[in-house]
Length: 235
Image (cartoon, rainbow, N blue to C red; front, side, top):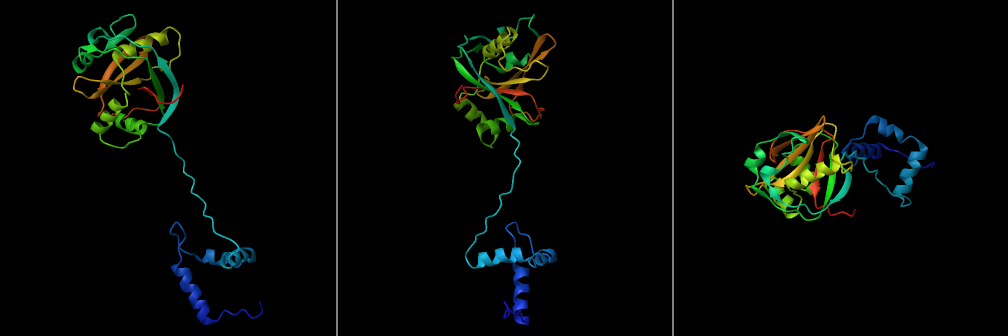
């Protein structure tokens, strides 16, 4: 140690090195950082690194990721027979409002839906239909592509199936419908070979049923629930 000398040339080299060096995050050396090197313990670690007795392991930055959708539950629904669209949601004792666009947007006949599995997901933060679809499908794309994927993956359901959910919930079975005034959203194929969103909301003792376009830019608040058909996970 006695022969260690920092002459002017070596000191200049060190200064240039400090000015050029950057941390993994692009940070530059500051006077306080250089002063830390006067700590013998730190200098000992640096010496171990230089002489091959140690290696640098960078800390991973911790990311706080808030998932847009939280899985509430998965359920199975038995096969549901088809019926005329105009006959869906017409029970006045159960429904106080039925959107007239249901008849205008959907085919006159609703098809039978075979036994299916559903994934029920709740919004953890505000989002549009497009963002919800993109999150669930694992793709960030335009509405047309997302519609294609929804149909290819059989994520859509039928109006009679939505009716059956409401009937089961009212019969005392907890199938995941929000019953506190918040909306429950379902994806249904419309007559334009696209997909529209039907939502049901319990207001008091009766239900309101509306339909909205999938590309609608409205932002829906957290705690609303989305029902995706043919969930591929295990029940």
